[in-house]
Length: 303
Figure 1 (cartoon, rainbow, N blue to C red):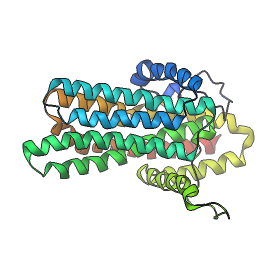
Figure 2 (cartoon, rainbow, N blue to C red):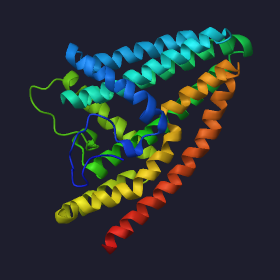
Figure 3 (cartoon, rainbow, N blue to C red):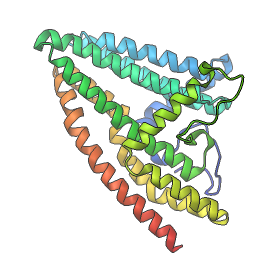
């Protein structure tokens, strides 16, 4: 269980929220990440540098997986993706430890994630297209789009849990409309904020009724400040099990599925599964989430 007190809204622990973590993060990836974070902090390495290092591992994983016909290449691809996962867990922990989280860091972290999977998908597609023909590229492209939508929906569940459940500032959702432009601030300086807002808009569109729910819950908390801690506790009790269910769409299980498909010499099946299997799971999870939103708001109305 998370060891934060129930009323610790706004607290920023270094480790990610334990009650919504899947077992692969909780007992393997993040403990290793935590050990590296201490080293990175002592060496003065920035979270963004760690993110880029993780992305480099992801790109090399794509190169390795392009030779998946050789078993050692598939094993190397899996090992490099595990390295990316560990560094991906470390950059966020390091940002919270050093209180250096920013819109740029959030955007860069997301870009590194997508570049990693894009590299792996392209690596597999290069070899598959030689074996089966150029039509494979269309399948991989559709799979990549499905991946982006599924990942955005899952990350929204995690972010809103940390924000509404614990009140963490690092998980705050930006207003979808950009603020008025300030004099002396260049377009390049505003770029991370613009990208972050647009990505959040996409997440909310994919996540069903999330935007309406967020606006309603924000009004309830503003109108009932004395009940803030209790409402957040109720939120955690209601939504923690749901976020754990959403973890089936996380990068961890994709990494395992890619490794299994490559080792079995059937990576084409992975792309079909991502489109059909995970697409169906997303639809089911969204339907359940909409029902959970309605039920939670109804229960708050009865408090």
